[in-house]
Image 1 (spheres, rainbow, N blue to C red):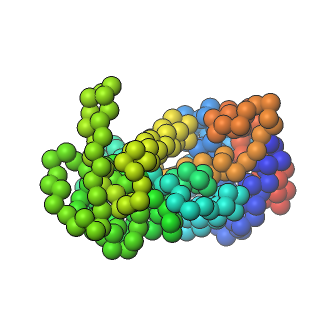
Image 2 (spheres, rainbow, N blue to C red):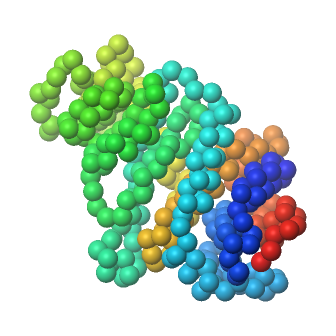
Length: 321
């Protein structure tokens, strides 16, 4: 596992310059964020900087805060896209891949955001259940209905894939846009929605959960599947909820530490990058094979080192601070 994690991180660090800024270069900036997101022993960025400053690495937290406000997120976005491509290469595409799509909302508590009339940030993306990778993501500050982002949703669904969505996307205009682009979907609609629509484009499937006594109505353009097959596909939507749970519980998605839009965007990208690194890395079979097993084993490795910043000196001895 150590060589696997090291190999992945080393390949990423090589793409970032250690000389582009005099105090906090892009490589060190990335290492600090990666350490904070992956090291569960850190509860705040101040804890990390205390660790760095008292172990020979002189970096001021105010310099880091300034970088979060002013640096562009292009490096993080590019690395995120590259890791998705790597994961796709490991798992070849198949016909009708299932892609649950949803959004999660993170409350913004800083008054600096409130002054800009931002009270929440929405992260929307999907997860390809066949290839195991998250889709492209949409980061939106403010309030907006999920169905308003039809173009972004369509871009998240690969050719031949099936988008699986909950009632937040329930809009006939949204389904019309999906149908016009020949994008396959299974969307739960609200029980009070009128079902007057073009039967050539999509149909509505009814089924009931007897345990919870809940009625489900699903709109889909999968005409050849039976009602039972459509309902089985919709049940896979829960996997996106499991993704949010992992990102918030273990990778600190719900602990936004910066107080500006640029910094929040960078942290969200960093959380997704950390998730992809965990998906790509390997650990000894003795420790398990689930994502949580990988994360726990990584905590053991990080506990032997002061931080990923220190670890990088072994990976890339030419790294300069």
